[in-house]
Image 1 (cartoon, rainbow, N blue to C red):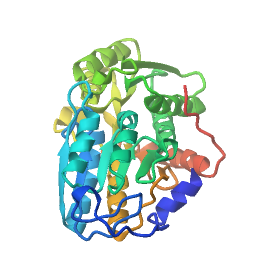
Image 2: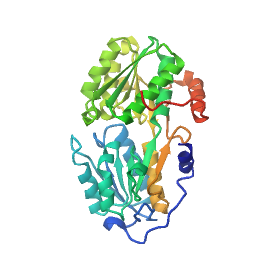
Image 3: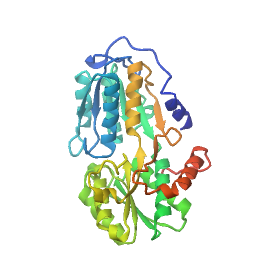
Image 4: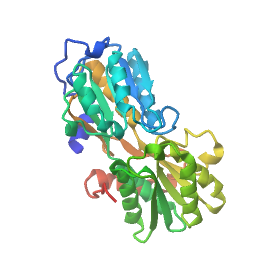
Length: 352
């Protein structure tokens, strides 16, 4: 993990030889995992469930995309999957067919289909967020991974230090190994501070049912039950469903309820001051940085095909937001745990 982080810190400087051919009819860029040196790329992005406007994971990805286009020029196209995600492969194929290069898949669910697509378009450069290119064995694919458990550990530390009831909660969108990393880190961080703390962890939907990332009504019901049961802080890793957790916290704010956001600084993405008032912090997953850095490497010809880049605490790929000032008084303690993780003194679990 630290080796990959150092690679990231060096802006992914290990370059392969650039291809002479444009991939998939693209106006620029090389395939086979070799950065193409395109000055004005045509970028394709396939969203995860929830699409643009989720104020979380997807919006962070498109923010990185737009920042890269602003810097390098070019154009982009983004597509969203249908409700059950059954057309994910079609989205990637459409983007590659239309000559977009690179093509970026947002979310681990694309890992089930992207292997076949990248084989069909060997001259197109692909990236996937939250799935391993190494495991898929594709030379024209780069995995953009995160140490979600590390950032979530700090969220657990903050929750335990701020909880007055000694009871906190976690709401996950879909019960998958990826979201379990958030749960595992959160529980471990809370228990590191207060070994006797109670953590109530629940999921909106089971593995295979991705509706849990876009069901704020169900998330609100689950979180409300936690607050009613004595929890005063609930951390959500639920994509677009997370809004429901904030709404539940706002409804219970008279009893001191707070919530912790995820992926983006959600204090700054919600429009309602009543919701801002209950967002203690957010676990930042810098998908925006990962996307923009990948596009940078494509433009300068240094994409690492067939490799995984891990964004961890050491690389500032994950962390906690400070908007609202609600954790200012415990920042020194949070920073201490952060450094212990970076130094290897604390090993954070990835499974509950």
